[in-house]
Image (cartoon, rainbow, N blue to C red; front, top):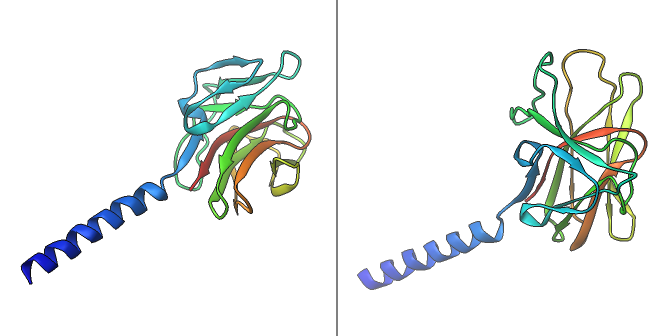
Length: 175
């Protein structure tokens, strides 16, 4: 009887540990990236990459000292941002990452415009849009972060970029 209980406990522990490992999340946070200008593919942790070119660069920059640091829905403050510096595609001004079918992809972003609403798109490797996040203009000293989520429709590579004009990406989480 005692051995049976111990075996069940050990089995439960193994399944719990494997379940935790299997559902581990991958993420990219602007706060964790070294400040600077990116002009080619920059590989980061958890399989994320920022893709840029000499002509269509991406900057990792800090918010000005005169603004309140933006916060996402979870309450995390961001002192830095991935500044896409204009519209993008799968070839430039984007963040590239992988997800498995059914994993939840969450993106936190904002527009850099003071006048125009802009959209951040997430597309799959064929270019099919799986998520679009509309971000309204910022005309105050506080940047509002907009968040969107989608379950990955298939296992593969995904790209996040601005459909038109400059946008900031703060965080992408795949879980």
